[in-house]
Amino acid sequence: MARQVPTRERLIASARYLFWDRGFAGTSMADLLAHSEVNSGSFYHYFESKEALLRAVLESYVGALRPMVVDPAFATTSDPIERIFAILAGYRERILATECRYGCPLGRLALEIDPENRPAHKLIAQNFAGWIEAVRECLLEARDRLPKGTDIDALATFVLAVMEGGVMLSRSYASVEPFDLTVAQLRLHLPNQQRGRTRKRSTSD
Image 1: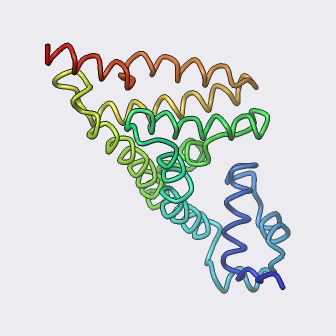
Image 2 (image 1 turned 90 degrees about the vertical axis):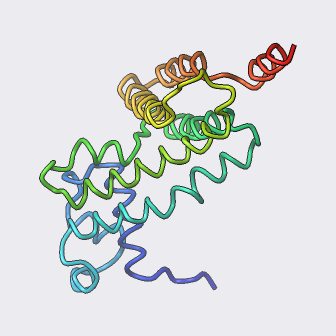
């Protein structure tokens, strides 16, 4: 017998999909109730408003970042630079799997949610910070392969900007090509494993 998903989890899962697919403003309470198969009384038992549900969705993204995005990418390679590109490859797969309809849900919400909604934007920023930290860990491990004086924090933030921009452009152009172009340019700024080894050999000579 299949496990019945608890009502609160169903609401969060439905909101996570609908906010990505239609946007926060474009998702009505009726949409949420119909998609989750929950009545309004049950909804208000768990959440005081759609905004409260939004915060729960954003909190779920914080918890899912490592197990759903970072860890699977890191498991594909032990090289720290290639781990960064493995994370980006995961987003490329999502772009292709959704026929270029994929848009980073956090990026979409960051643009849509009113700037005065500070609780939501604080959680969005927390998600972005976790993403940047994962890339920063890779860059720190590969520090001896980077130019002396490289600002690790700024570079990790730049990688996030590459991903967000590439995903947004691919959705607008209905093509994965913009994403591939941005990632290819990033490749020019990050040393690959072979270049790192060459540098070490030349230094030791």
